[in-house]
Image (tube, rainbow, N blue to C red; front, side, top):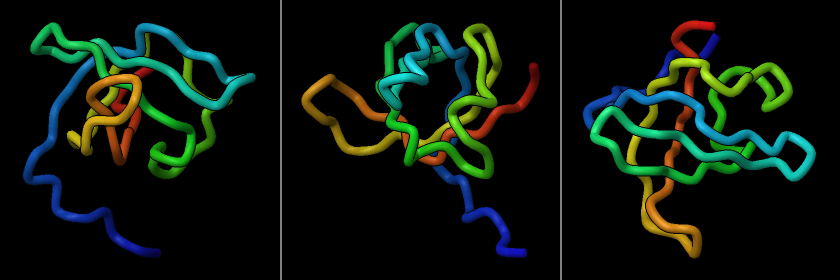
Length: 78
């Protein structure tokens, strides 16, 4: 199995809004900022496995049209 990439700019947060039907959601970071993520950025499982309120860790991606983006989103607890 492939190993996860080194997570040097790893951040933590909570899934605040989840639109699984549309394939995206928003994370409220531990820094208080909101981060957009697309279902393609979820590491290791599909968006339908995630729930609002789940704790996640993620990497900061480039800003997109909806603001700061989260990449490599990975659930850490349910």
